[in-house]
Length: 407
Ligand code: C5P
Image (tube, rainbow, N blue to C red; front, top):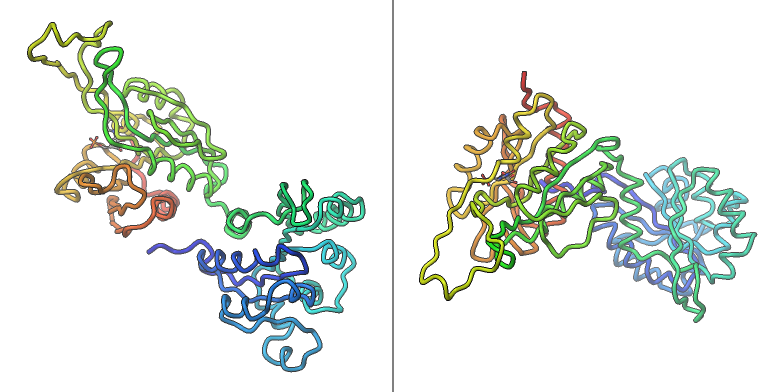
């Protein structure tokens, strides 16, 4: 399945005269990685910094550089390109290019293309920091913004000229992340998504606990994918060593009991609940107040008590969110997952094999996703991509109102 996020987008990348022009080569690649079809237009100045041949090799198409070259205009002229493009992205955009856009110039190919196109335009400025701060440039930026042209960046840091300040082209990966946000409508805008992630630790005494090998990577990747889809995300995490995804509200917990309380606090506020956490099924009946001494016991028996099942409790609520559970199994993955889907009254379950270096604490995974009326295999992929694919499926089922209701 794995539809890339820009799989249906035709993008013209305009490159202008800036030392950052070399980064545009990477940008083209990254856009293609997301599935975009790319054509490149370069200004004369851009060709002084990087050759059209490089961009032709990367994009797989001749690079347009000239407005008045009959052969270029005959293949895909500025009007044809203007109609072809779903988006025009100028990166790097020099100070001169910004000024030309403000004035609606049309004496070179890129300016003429922008003037002739009704497609949305995004520009990523790159220039010396003094040029960027100059009121002329700042006024130009204000004017472009007032025309709904998207300005991305610039970043700040050391510049090619040796100065320190604002004016660096935003890094290609970050640029693509921003472009995806702009180009792909956020399907979960206004929705609240609650996600649990990571393991739980059930204390035996002040220094020992019962835990598991969950790293939290999948849950954190799912949180990121939900944010990318426009959701407001709360991430309830067991003990993990992972940075909070930008934009998520994070609640740290340690035990299954604490995770239960954190989930139930506001559960009726959420539209979707995704239970990624590997919650302990049992906890020691008693937690010793002091460290258990080995000298006192030849053998030691621990009495374990079942923890409360969080996801099942949420499923019993009268107004319940759309609920997605996970099933990490070492054997009979599909059978167990199917059984859990029904017994726990989930709307969807994502099942995967764990153990022997698969599933937990690794960066790749695959998932078999089941719901009442269907299933879908998400093949082995980096957890980041897998999380996006899973989110796409969740959104489809959620939109189809394919959820269980309690009367
Ligand atoms: O029963 P099992 O632990 O295999 O079920 C896995 C699913 O149930 C996961 O979605 C997990 O987050 C959730 N679960 C829970 N509370 C528990 C145990 C599991 O929410 N106490």
